[in-house]
Structures are given as structure tokens and as C-alpha cells.
Length: 161
Ligand SMILES: [Zn+2]
Image (cartoon, rainbow, N blue to C red; front, side, top):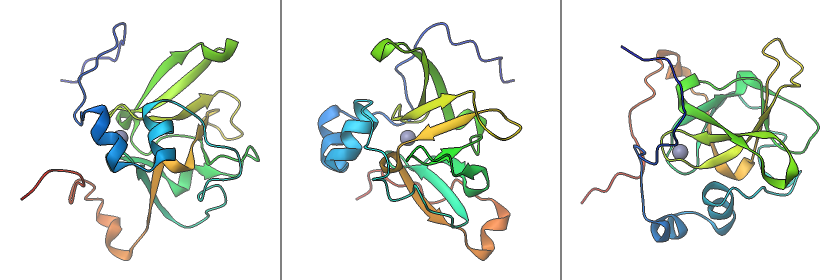
């Protein structure tokens, strides 16, 4: 019973919702400025720009699985680039008209963290180029038993004990 997505109203209710101060403590200063304040890391500085390992890229804020290495390509822009999300529902697209440009912002649906932008000049058949900040991602190398695809075990960040 999934209704068609029509986002006319920005909802601030997130599965993962934390006070700003907590984000500030849990994230590195760079991650905090990118994820929570939509800043952009400097090109060619992120650790995943030239990462060609197989695996999944998770949200550095909440651990949600966002992109697969299968979708990663070398765009030459200096930021990790993907032609599609691993799970369509994991990301949310929002119009971003800041900096006098019309762009589409990519945010993590689960925690609302800013990831980057998506452009429609991708080189593959999807036509999309998700231009994502390295620091907003956590790379998880593929292991042999990941074929099963049990993505929801071991969620980080839940308060225990
Ligand atoms: Zn997230």
C-alpha cells in the first residue's frame, strides 16, 4: 500500500531525529557541516573519490544503505558519483535553488542528512549523476555472505545500555 510519492510539503519527521547538539558531537566537524548544513566538501579531498572496491556506501549519519559500488563511476568531478541509489526510497530529492542555480538536492530519507546533488547529465543509461560528498558516506566493503542481502541488521546509533 505504498502511495505514489508526491512531496508537496516538506515533512520534518524522520525515522532518525536527533537534536543538533547531538549531531555535532557524533559527527566529525566536516561531516556535521555537510550532512547537517548542506555544505560541500572540497573536490578531490574525499576518501571515496577513487575507491573502486565492491561494497555499499551507507549514510555516515544514520547507517542507511544508500549506494552500491556497482553504480559508482568516475565522473572526474572530484566527488564520488553514482548513476542510481541502491534503494530508491533511501534517498529523497528536493529542489535547491541556492547559489543562483537550479539544482536537485539529495538527502538521506532516514535522517535528513544532506548527501549532495543529482544532475541529469549522467553517462550511463539512467542519465543520472548523483554527485555525493565522500564524508557523508561510510563505505562497507562487500563480504562473501552479503549475497543474502540482509540489510537491516546491526543498525548503528540506537541507544542501548
Ligand atoms: Zn542518514
